[in-house]
Length: 292
Ligand code: SAM
Image 1 (spheres, helix red, strand yellow):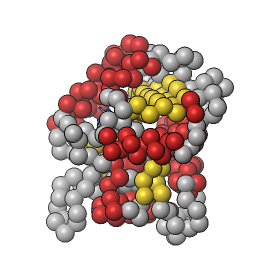
Image 2 (tube, helix red, strand yellow):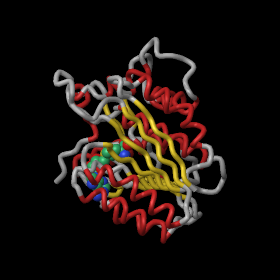
Image 3 (tube, protein in one colour):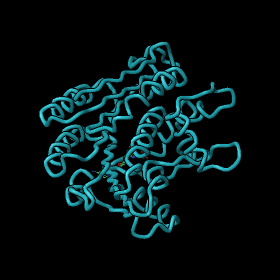
Image 4 (cartoon, protein in one colour):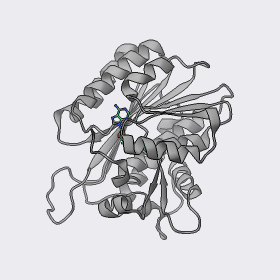
């Protein structure tokens, strides 16, 4: 079974990027009345304690969300980044940030009565935690937790009843084959439901598969004749030049097919601020590119 546990990484710079994009995308999609289906192919545990053992051990949130929430963080922030911070604050009481919402809770909080969310999580411990956390919401039929392979099992939900869906695909990439599975899943999903919004997170690391993935996704989107958006956030050099610093993910990216037309402008404002505020060395940077 997998050893990846998102609790170690919750609230890190990659979550800042991913969850800012998720919120901005959902806000746009929820402007239309018709029901939306959200498929979260790799859901995680849903809620994380930032003062718990996992997060304290890794300290990743300290260089992520906690930097943005620290007193003295510059204002005004870009609206998309501000909406993300407001979302995290909504899960916490008072000034301290102890709880970090994962993608299932962020999405569920934004959804309306008519919308549905399916959460796929294969790790038995995280699936149990997710089911327990979701049960407390008493959200009834709106939220379904499925202990199933998200890559494979979204097929049965595409196309969705009202023909509106956001698929968030956020694997741990613990297994090398995850990169190819993302591509296969997208290819199949676009055949089943060409107008869906697909949002893929991936790590930018020194591994050929990781390097190749955005290039392959661009080719896939271009061949399908679909618009795409690619955003990356780098917080430090990929080379471990400073041995005294703990290793960690240097950068990550979000690739969207059929992105909301409002997302590019939102990220043009938010990404430079993320790169500036989350920089761990002078190599911090961002990229935003779109294709149609
Ligand atoms: N999306 C979550 C968020 O933003 O809060 C974080 C998800 S975490 C990066 C990836 C999760 O996928 C892990 O909890 C892992 O156990 C789970 N997982 C790995 N392979 C899976 C698969 N094939 N189907 C469903 N879940 C899987």
